[in-house]
Image 1 (tube, rainbow, N blue to C red):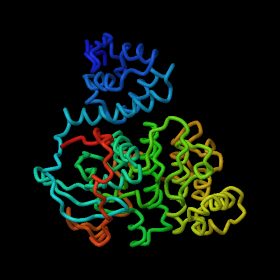
Image 2 (spheres, rainbow, N blue to C red):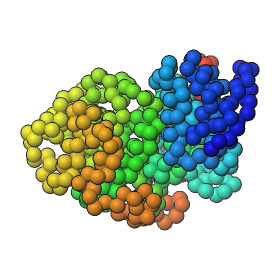
Image 3 (tube, one colour):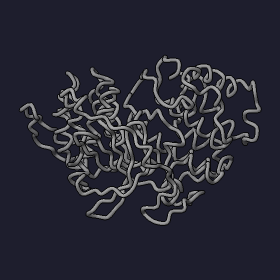
Image 4 (cartoon, rainbow, N blue to C red):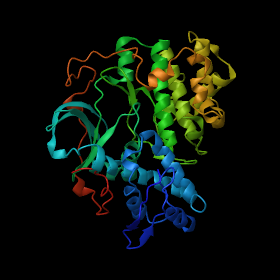
Length: 435
């Protein structure tokens, strides 16, 4: 790159001298020097990175490399803290770069609601239209009163940060976030094909190798993208795999995603897809996402989950032990009856008791999946460049066709008045990317 940054005045009033040569990924010797002593002020680093001339034009697939390069500059004394901080910084910089160079900001006041798409325990998702461009999006609103009551402030802030950090054709794009007194809003790419589970149930797709391989391969690319950014997704399941109008699959819902370079210990996710190490509370890594992918593969091929009778929260630990005995020790081959042998091997290779033995965790990473014998005939390159036709294309009549969704107004969650829970901490001050 070889560009000169010159001098930058930091938010603390100090002048940071940038080196003459930015280098391959743009981190300066000034940052490296400060990081060796201690983690520089976050605001200062954000300021420095936002001024890097080439950053707005950096391909999305190099964002992870930039984070890694910056990490190396500061890992001598501050380790994991630097990696976490730099990922947060990078997410803010991506948002800033898009704001200044690549897209027009979308304002909340310019959005009109069209119809209800879905609802959950403390939020709703609406189909909306941008009044200026007439484009349609999905707008998720989350009640701040409920967030505060359940102490999920950090969780919702992490959801925004992790999804904003991602830029992949296999992940639903987060365009903007808005903040009003009562609610927080996520403006995302619209996926009118609906949930993958709904498509499978309605059209009897269970057991189809072609369909399963396509969706599993798409999930592999999505997880690979996240893991390159130290994001553990922690909630992969058919409900969080959405279909576009053309039938392409994208992963959504970063509500449980977390930036973690090493082990983390929080028990969360859907019990049916939780890895044994998460259930045991011994600490876990991104390997839990590959376990979940193994279970998704099993379910898409067989039409049921392998230990459905043990999925309640009170017996999930027992269920994990039972499932492992079935998968790894061949105690009951009947559970795999009807599944192609190579697919069974693939599921087993993703669901080993030892996280380090799951094939994407070994040397070679996700290439071990690409080269797996179950995918011998699969066209990975065509999937990546979007030249292969999806095996199923949803029937969608228009940009407002809701036939692939099933939600009624009477299912809307109750709203809690934020004034009854607002503690004045301003925890949501940095949530919005636009007004």
